Amino acid sequence: MRLLRRFLVVRVRAASVSIMKTSTSHSLLTASAAVLCAFLVPSAHADVFGSGANTLTLEFVTIGNPGNADDAGAGGGSYSSPYGGVPYAYRMGTYEISHDAITKATAGGLLNVRAGPHTGNEPAAGSAWYEAAAFVNWLNTSQGYEAAYQIDAGRSSLTLWSSADAWQAGGKNLYRHKDAYYFLPSEDEWYKAAYHKNDGVTANYWDYATGSNTAPTAVASGTGSGTAVYFQGGPADITQAGGLSPYGTMGQTGNVWEWQESAFHAPNDNPSEQRAICGGSFGDDNLGNGNLRSSGRYPYTPASAAIGVGFRVASVPEPTSTVLMISAGLLALARRRRRAALWTVSGAAGAKGIS
Image (cartoon, rainbow, N blue to C red; front, side):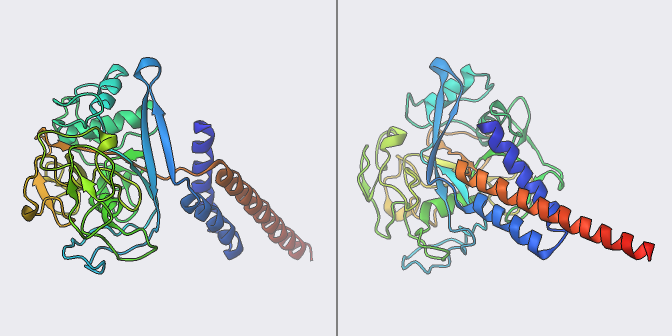
């Protein structure tokens, strides 16, 4: 099924380029297929990696409302940052990556990525940005997708992609490959999943990733609405890390800071520049320092690691089976119309030559 999905999505993209060059009517059909692929996606989905005792499952939620604007303070809160505008749908990991996930990936061939000092289903922390990127690459290549990042074997440096190979959606991103399926979330992608109100194509955001402008209640563990893991001696299980964001993610306020794909100062054109970390951690003991708020972001060297810094994974949206079939049907219809148009033009030209 995965290979069929990849084939159809690739054919949709390729045909879109070809058909759009022929006529407006053909373009409309192709656009319809593209819209179906982009928007009619599952709201939640789990992806499976590895096998046997080392099977690894990552859960994702769909982040919709493509085309929303950055946070400019319109959500009624007291804090904001100029991030969160994303022109496409995508998926965000429901939870942070766990220590266990790194352990299982390592058993499946991942090399030189530390899981950190926490255990089991607690978050992986103590991984440098380069190591987090290497884990994402393993997710991609283990499923037959393009690696997202050019990371050296020692997990200590990044090579930029060429402009031709770089991600272009939402602006050129030389860190990420254009065909990557899994990736570290950019700051815009991460911010939107955490704080956007999920109320349509708006610029409305909350101050905290618990769907509120009120500071969350500190807990050691749990899933209560309006709670977060901070002012604690250690992190919680990633599935017990507080209340959910409006899109359904957990732990984007508290538990551990999270690596952003993005350079602290945009654009992503310097491979060694400091990266942003956001969200605060279990060790935050003072709401006044602002670490847990939407405005809390700090620079961190990509080769550095700390027990309070982890990460989560994002992904391109996955079309449903129905969407793939409808899209394939639309493209087939578009091709038939294109052939008919070409035959008509050819016949007219021939008749004109005979006369």
